[in-house]
Image (cartoon, rainbow, N blue to C red; front, side, top):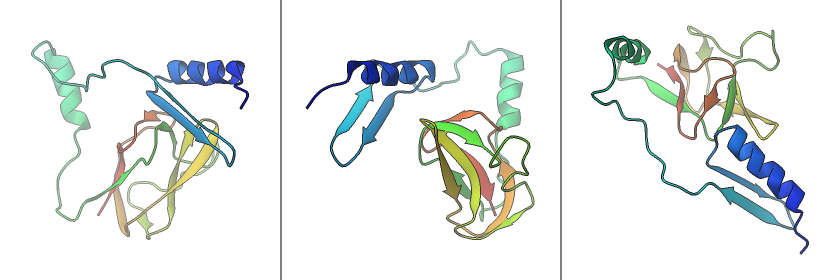
Length: 145
């Protein structure tokens, strides 16, 4: 098996430039995983947070108005897009009704546009991510009631 070091260096640069921790690619002939090593510290609010920052954090918290609230989460690391192309109408907005299997957004990972479908039916009550924002695996994208 011949190793294309230039290709691996490009993948490592993508990993670094996009603040990712891992990239995995596989085809019928080969597989490659590039993983950043090091200690990953989860975000923690400490005593050093200023009053202004605390207020900002509180505004972002989702309201827990109903026990019927379901999460739609990102199945991968990438960039969130609410529409199929810039300037296009978003797939869904707050107040829209979705059915199981409806496309609700796109997560771009390594130049591939991945349609994210709803696994639940209901009304979109909150979109938690801004268009173009990076998302992590398991991050809540929106809530459905």
